[in-house]
Length: 508
Image 1 (tube, rainbow, N blue to C red):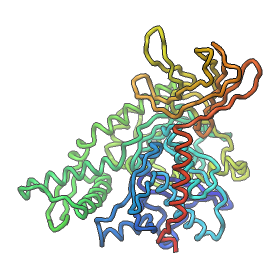
Image 2: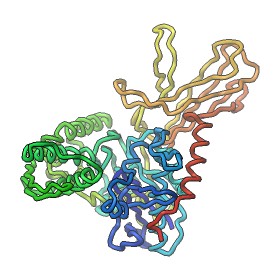
Image 3: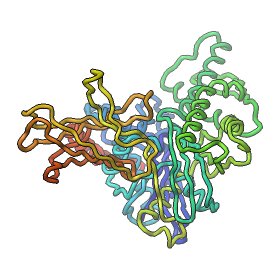
Image 4: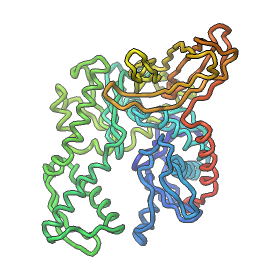
C-alpha cells in the first residue's frame, strides 16, 4: 500500500488511492469517524500517547508535559525535551511517533502493509528541515517514496477533481503553524511550479494566542485582577481560544457572546470579529506582502492569476478572503475553498501515483516540476572588502532539478583540505541559514592553487547534494557534507533506540 501523509504542525492525516484513483482518508484505528490526528505527544516513562488521547489524559492531569508544534523545530538539531531518564529527544523523534501512529491506523483499516509514503512539507522548508522530515520517517521505519510541498499537493488534488487545466493557480496555504504561497500552472501532462514563498512560524497558533489575549484582557477588566495561570487554565484557555477562532470564522457572524469556565472562574466574554481581525491584522498583511512578492518572483502580474486556492484551516478566517478580494482584480470570483483541511493529504497520495508511474492509468497528470525555494550559495572571504560574502550558485525559483558548478582553489602549498560553508537564503535582506559544511580532502599532492570542482545539485524534492572532483584527473574526491555530520549520525542513532523502545499506548 502506498500512502500520502500530511505531517502537519497541529494535525496530521494519511490518505491512499482507491482502485479508481480517488483519494480517501484513512481513519483513526480506535475512532472510525475521526480522520485526523493531533500532532501532540505525551511521554510517560517508556510509554507515549499520541493524538486525541493526549487531550483526554490532560483533562485528568493537566500538569503532564505535552509536546506540540515540534515541526517548527525540525532542522534545529537540538533536543526539545528530556525525559525522566535524562534522555534527550529531538523533534524528529516526536514526528516519528506521530508517523508510527498514522502507519498503524492505515494498516489496521485496510489490512495491508504500508510499503511506501509520500510526505508533505511546507513549500519554504529548507534543506535541513526537509532532511529532518526524512529522518522522522526513517525513525518510524516508513520507506519514503518522495516529498511533496503542501500547496502543490493541494493544487494537484484540486486540478484532478475539477479539471483545472491550462490555468495559473495561486495557492494560499495558511495552516496551524506555517504560511506558504505557491504559484503553479497545470495541464493534462502535469503540474509546474512557477514560484513559491512563505513564513516558517506563523499560523493558527498565533491567531489562537491573539484570542487568548483578548480573553485575558476582558477577564482582568471584569474581575479586577489577572487570571491566575497554571497548567489547567493554560489548557482550557488554548481550547477555548481555538473554539472561538473557529466560530468567528463562520460567515456573517460579527460577534460571539459566550459563558466560559477557566479554572474555577466562570465569566462571560463578548468578542467582536473586528477586534479579532485587528489583533491579527499585521500577520495577515505579512501574508499579503509575501503573496505579492511571490507573484513578482514568478514574473507575473496580479491579473495573470486565474484562480486563488485557499488551503489550511486558518485560511477560512473571513478577513483573509476580504483582504485577498481587495488585492486581486475580480478576487471574489477567483477564490476557491477546496477541502481546506484535507486537500494536502489527498494530493500527497496522488503524487505517490506520479512517482510510482501509475498516474496515467489513473488519469492523473503524470509530470511534476518544482522550483527552488531559496538562493543557495557558499560563504567566501573577499580580501578586497575584507568581509565574508555569499557566492550564489543556484538562485531562488529556478526549475528543479537545478545544478551549478564552481571551481575553488587551495590558498597554500600545505593545505590538505578545502572547507566550505553552504547556506540558503530568501533574499539579500534575510539571514542566511547554514545548511552544512562541505569538507573536501585529503587532497592528493597538495600545492598552492590546487583546483577543486564543486557541483551542487538541488533535487526535485528540494534536497541538496554536493560532489567534488579533481578537474585534472576527473576523479571524485573524498568529501563529507552536513551540519555536524558525525555528531548528527550519533544523535539519530540514539533517537532510533528511543523511538523503538517507546510503547505507544493507543495503538492496541
